[in-house]
Amino acid sequence: MGRDPINLHRALGHAPALLAPVLDLIHALRFDAKVARSLRELMICRIAQLEDSDYELAHHLPMAAESGLDEDQVASIAGWREAACFDERQRAVLGYAEHLGAGADRDDEALDKCFDPVEQTELTVTGATYIALARMLRALDVRIDASPLD
Image (cartoon, rainbow, N blue to C red; front, side):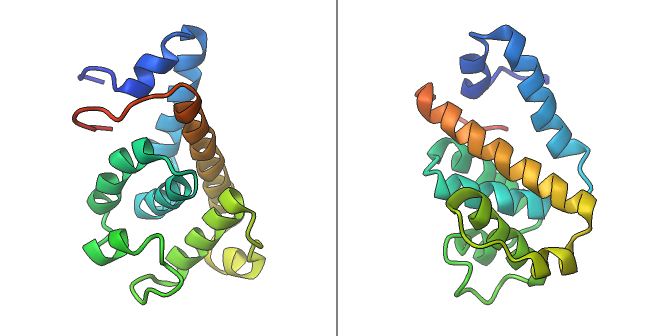
């Protein structure tokens, strides 16, 4: 990718046969998804909060800002239910993140109103992937990079 590998890649590199498929999935979610990047970053950041993944937050909070979320939105992800800065689609994503990551009830009406089946699948795979990554990071005791770039 034109830069040194991040600590997650270094840790997964101990199992080289698994590194490429994991990176392929992450890259597909990042570059080939139909769902807007800002919505995927909302999903990832809320999952990271629920999983207490400081590593993912160090990487993805800046990405959330770069994807178009404003400062209030980035700062309000954890308290999104009380925040007035999120629109209907963003609220559906945040609620779905809590369903995936914390077992909250799934709001099928909100999901169906805001997202087609392809988008719902992309959000599901995004959330599930970042839950798995958070758990891998924790199990492998991966430290936050000195300068998160990914």
